[in-house]
Each structure stands twice: as structure tokens, then as C-alpha cells.
Length: 457
Image (cartoon, rainbow, N blue to C red; front, side, top):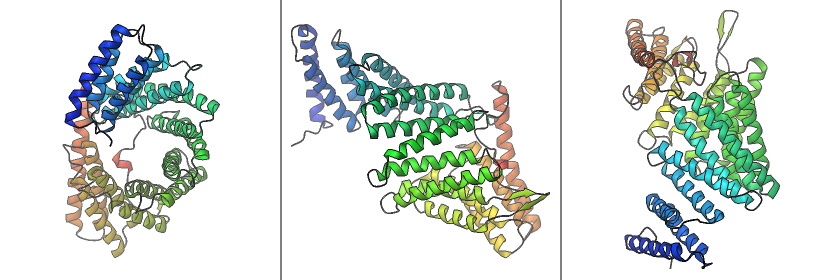
């Protein structure tokens, strides 16, 4: 019968045994050769606590081992520090994110120094990977504060620094896994490299396209190992990420090159959707369906030519709307409020584009559907909770009402359009003032488009 480590009846005895064992090791370790096994058994107990979500108890045991036994041999200390790093990384999802990630980075860095490549190559590679994923997550938190005129705190420079450090760590691990013939670990590390470069591209600047090229190269390398037959779920994950990278690269290109990139993005999303079925992977499918819809909208969006807007590919827009609606069957307001709001806003944008120049009843019906979608998104993205998102949706709402005014209730819909635009402007002006008070300035990072660019007028 398995012992449940999370049971309150087990917690006291485990810590008492840990204390006694460590006291014995501290006095006898010079003559006893069994202490390594005891320490690793205690570490296994800590792993069990971490596995059932009791990370603080796990961290307490690791701390007792590290403090209670002087002059641990390098490989043993490296093992404990590696496990501590994993627990700190897991804790970052529960709270004190930056603090836990900084401690995880510190633990993995020491483990890397202690695990020599010649003696412990796989352990060294695992520690490098742990360092890399911690730095990537740390950069994502910092990316929440990339400077922009809405007043968010700065973080682009630190984000780029940590992502570049992560890439170096992943590349060190990759070299070892390739030499040792560890195909699946190699694939996961290639995928991690792709994720890091994809995030790096979001900072913008002149090297964004280069970062996306490298992300695509890494994802395609991972797919050589992640076959549909042997590793379908991993393959779907990588195909989805590859589609993201192609879609982002398309937004930096023009003409036939842009169209080719979007075709590749759509093909990647379709390949992932063949694996991520509604029955087996509803949440993952909803994510890919949303991205698939975004790529279809980009492919179908209107183009300016000779002073006129050419409304293109209505069928592609209809497929995008179907994809968003399929995703919303899973991304409900109750279960997934943030994803619900994101997808509702995207649905509204697609419906506004489908309405084109607003020339008939069908266009009016699409605009009314778009307005409902925007209003539902605003129930989640409130001004207090998400001022930037609120302003973007209000801007989109203004576009929809203005177009609808061409078809009916001209005065009333124009008034509603003005109210929505004014709501967006108030929030953006407040953000710009906050940014100015903090001494911000300079050019836009290019990481995001403003809401004004989201829909054609």
C-alpha cells in the first residue's frame, strides 16, 4: 500500500526522521558511506510532497539537508539544489513569482557548476534546461511590463537579457542531449529554444524577424523527433507554436512573402487540430482554433490599392468566425473569463471586417453580432481590471457603431460610436500621463499594435 505523503499524520514523523538522520550524518559522515542514500531518500520524500502540491514542505526538507550537513560532496549537493530549483519553479505559479524564480535560477546555476559535464552530462543538461525554463518564465513576467504609452512598467531590456541567457542554457543542454543520443530530450530542448526566440521577437526592433527565423528553425528541428505516431500531443504543441511563429513573421512581411508565411501558419494550425480533437483535448483545441482564426483573418483582411479598400476572401473570414465560435464553446465566461474575452474580441473584429463597407442587411446583421461580442468582452475586460484591453475593445466598438450608422439609426449609432471612442481615449490619455510621470518616452517597442490598428475604418 502506498503511503500518502500529504497526510497530516505523516508530516510530523517525516520531519522528525529528517532531523535525526541529518544530525547523524553531520557527525558521522566522514566514516559512514551510506549517507548519500539516506539524503537522496529524504530528497525523494521532499519530491513526494512537491508532487502533491505541498511545495513549502519540500523546500523545508531541502533546506534542512543543505544546512544540516556540512561539506556535501558536489554531486549530492548538485542533486539537492536541482530538485530545490524545480520546486522553486513550481512555486512561482502559486505566488511570489519573481522571488521564487530568482531562487530557482540561483539553485539551477549552482547545480550546473556542481554537475561536471564529463562526470554527469545528463544531470548537467537537465540543470541547464531548468535554468532556461526559469529564465523564460521570468522574462514572461517582465514582458508584462514592456514599456508603452499606456503606463505599464518597463522591462524590455531585462526581458531580452534573460531570454538570451535562457537560449545559451538551452543550447548547452542541446549539445549534450545530441551527443548522448537523447532524442526526446533534444526535441523538448529545441522546442524550448523556439519558445524563447518567439518571446524575444515580441520585444520588437530590427532583430524581430531574425528571432522568428530562429524560432521556426528550432520548432522544425523538434518536429523531426515529435512524430504524429509516437508523440502526437507533443507534436501538436510544437505545430501550434510553429504556426504562431509563421503568423508573427507574416506580420513583418509584405506581398507574396507575407502570403506564403500565412499559408505555412494555417497549415501548421490545421496539422495541430488533426491531433487536438474536441473530445480528447478541448482546451488545447480551443487555443489552436483561436490562433487558426487569427491567421485566417490576417489572410483575408482588406488591402488598400489605388486609394481604395479591397475587401477580400469572405470565405476565409467565415471560416475564422466558425473557428472562434468553436473555441468559445470551451472558452466560456464562467470557466475561462480571460480567454473568453480575448476570443469574443477577435470574433467581433472578424465580423466587422466581414461587414466590409456596410452596404446591406447582411452587413448590418454582422455588425450587430460584432457589437454583442465586444459588449460581452467588456464584461471581463473592465477599465479597472484591464485598462489597455478595455480601451482596445471600446475602440473596436466605436468602429462597429460608426459602420452601422451607415445602415440604420444614423444619429443614435454615431452617438454610441463617439461615446465608445471617448471611453477609449480617456483610458489611453490616463495611461500616457502615467507613463510621462514615470519619465517614459522613446519609440514604441513594436511588441503590440494599438487598438486603432486592429480594425479598418
